[in-house]
Every structure is written in C-alpha cells, then in structure tokens.
Image (tube, rainbow, N blue to C red; front, top):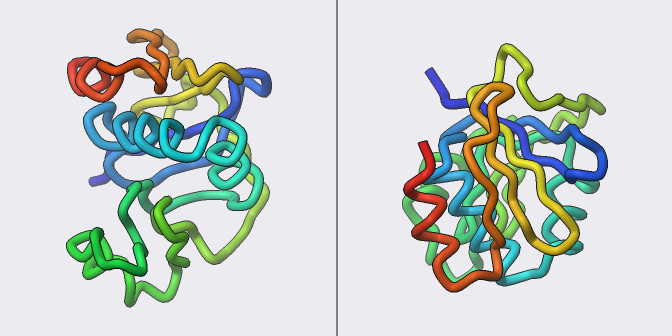
Length: 145
C-alpha cells in the first residue's frame, strides 16, 4: 500500500495527488530540494499546473545524466507514467482532480506559500511548517512525523 499525499499552493488550499512515498522523509524532502533548486513558481507550475497527478515526486528522476537510475528503473517502463525530468513521474491520464487537506484517502498534505514555506499536514492536523530555502530545511523535514 502506498503512502498517498497531495501537493498544492496554500493560496488554493488544495492540490494534486501523489501516489507513492507521501511521507515527509520522501515527498517533503523532494519538495524542499525541487523548490530550493527551481524556485517556488517554477516548482508549483510544474507540479500543480502542468500535471494533474503524480505517481512519485523525485528531484533526480528522469535525469538525462542518469542520477535517478534507481527510481527510473522502477517507473520508466510504466505505460501510465510520464517522466518529467528532475521532478518525477506524472500520470499520463490528466483528469482535473483537486484534493483538499484532510481528504480521507490522503496520509499527508503539503501546501506551499509563495515565499517557499511548506505546510505539512497529517490528515487535517498541521505537523509543522518550514521554508524550503532555509539551510536546515531538508533535515527538519525528515524529522516531521
């Protein structure tokens, strides 16, 4: 069974579904890395606006240089997934579904502010908030439970 989550913009209060590894130690850390690397607007445009759902978010997936070889070996041949370089594997089927914080099918939710602050929820309870641009954000995200 997968740890399901959603990632969205705080201003919307809802986001896009992510099927695998939704816990803060994976998807939360991936968000920190992606936002720190690409900035909030590009990250949220790619994750929320350009793609309607994800199998997995991974900041090294589908890398032309091969840095995400382990993840790529699991997803590259999945006909339902589209490799989005340095973001992960999005669903090819693009249903326009939005998921609210606390949806009963989600284990975690991540809402991102325009300044890079990521609010992390387990169900409807906020576990914490941290800024992706802080030096200790990756480590702090790993500690959220």
